[in-house]
Length: 119
Image 1: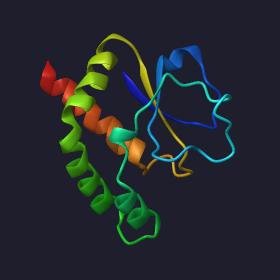
Image 2 (image 1 turned 30 degrees about the horizontal axis):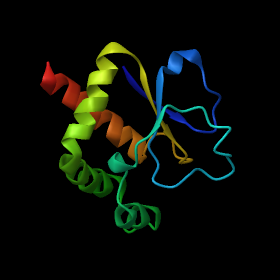
Image 3 (image 1 turned 45 degrees about the vertical axis):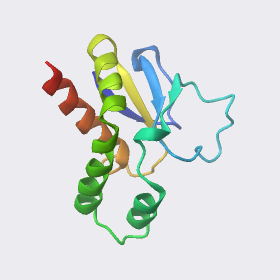
Image 4 (image 1 turned 30 degrees about the vertical axis):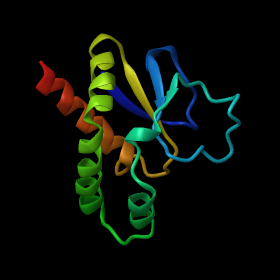
């Protein structure tokens, strides 16, 4: 199972393996305070793509498509996380205020697709 959660929400045992999926460290959180197992910068959107989306240069559909193209370059890393999700819950941690349209949701969907294609 792959789920998404804001870094500002309390951690829970049900989160399983917690992966920070932001390129930048979240504001207002000390590194010693965040409960996470891994910081996976390789699967985050490029700085250029992130800036274009946050400046409203790209809408969410265009951002999602471009981000999936970037993710295709890191399929082995994605497969590693998708394999972990076959045996335990994986929680993708993100800092974005928008909970429905953000990079973590796109990444989660991509990882689920990888898991299905592996089976």
